[in-house]
Image 1 (cartoon, helix red, strand yellow):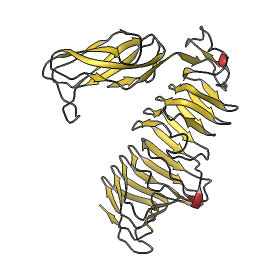
Image 2 (image 1 turned 90 degrees about the horizontal axis):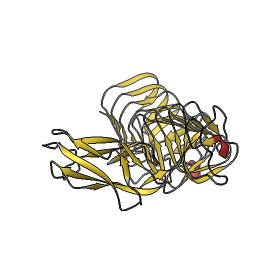
Image 3 (image 1 turned 180 degrees about the vertical axis):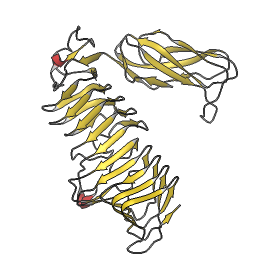
Image 4 (image 1 turned 90 degrees about the vertical axis):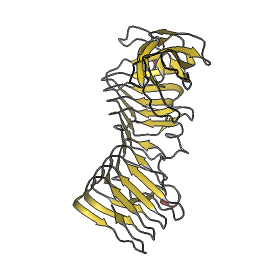
Amino acid sequence: MEILPNPIVVNEDFQVTIQAQNRGGRPANVSTDTDISLTRILTGTGSLTGNTTGTILAGQSQVTISGVRYGIAEYLQIEAARTSGDVLQADTSAVILAASAFYSNVDRNGNPDINTNWNSERDGSGSPPPAGALAGLFIIQADDTMRTVANFSEYDVVLRIENRGAFFNNTGTTELGSLIIEEGGLVRANSEIEISSNGNFSIHNNGTYIHNNTARLDEAEALFSGTENFAENSQFTVLQLSTIASSVNTFAQASFGNLTLNLTANAAQLSFNGNLTEVKGNLLIESTGTGRIEFSDNDTENYTLTIGGDFQITGGTVYLMDANAQCTINIGGDWIIAGGETRVTDGTGDPIIYVENNLVISGGTLNLSAVTGGVSTII
């Protein structure tokens, strides 16, 4: 079951997609028209209103029920149950939040910590949130920009950036319950952003997050301390990274959409310690500064990186591995080297790179040899 948007907004439409599956959890077409009904169950006190029924048509596996509403600001769960047609087991959602929403009402340079910069109605005709600490769902609308001027510490806030909306964390630390960047939305973190351990960090297709501060990008630290959900065509760009002992940066154990590394100010030998394992879209490395990056330097654990799209290197110094264990890189598109130095290994391991389409070298260098031994294979 998929519920969008998540969290939902009190008394506003949301949609629920239901899918029939076989015992192995794969989509399964129904043989006859199968009616589905939605109800609130277990968690929560209210009732669903609006459109709460839909039909999975014969020969199809899913239906999206649009126009569902909920009228109480609280946590709830939704059950989808079959009422006629093929026999299907009922499905219960995870706990979701129905939140009172407040909308940005500034065109540019609004301070998110000022209550009067938010309004309960999209057109600004309602009222601002109560004075004091902010709580609820706060939505930056199209063509509005919010910019912090000090710490924005609101763990009870879910911040959602809509198409053409923007949030610039310029000063201090921003603490959020959840962060949702919708299609066309932009977040630029010039200073640290923290997400609650119970929260979500989501980037929809064509949404963009730019990391331009020295906070660490690993699950033990703030930005990735909750649950991440990055769509395949989302964009995550890294302009700065911190270093810790021995110049190690463990990066984030997340499944990225499109990932760009442009570390022009870096002067260190950065190791991701094998934590970068999946990029569903394209991986682009533009610069490593005067330093270098290593995907893995672990001598005892094998390392696998899967890239769904292209792997493009236009600058910098990149070591796929600097270790003695096995390394496997799976590239679903092209491997494009247009600049910089790419060294497959600097250890005794035997890296294997699978390229689905083409290896294209138009600039820079590709070094397949190892300093201390090992065999590099490109398939």
